[in-house]
Image (cartoon, rainbow, N blue to C red; front, side, top):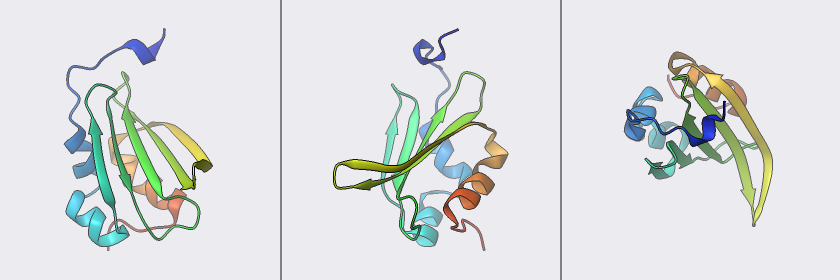
Length: 107
C-alpha cells in the first residue's frame, strides 16, 4: 500500500507541538523558532539551536497513527546529517528527539 497518497482527516499539527511540551517550552529549552504546520502534507516543523548534529525537525503523522521524525542540518543549500526515524509513537517523541539531538526538552 502506498501511504503517501492517504490523507488523514484527523491531522492536528498543533497537537504534535504540544506532545513535545508546547511551542513555548520548545522555544525556551532549545531555542526553537520558525514553527510550520502543513495540514495538506500532514507535518509540523521547527528550527532549533544547541545541537551540533541537527538544526531542523520535521514530524509527519502516518496512517498507522505513529510519527516519522526527520532531523537534519541545513548548511547553505545543502542538507547534512539527514535522518528519518520511522514509526515513533506519541509517547516516544520526546525521548527520541532527546536521544538523537543530545538536547533536553524537560528539566
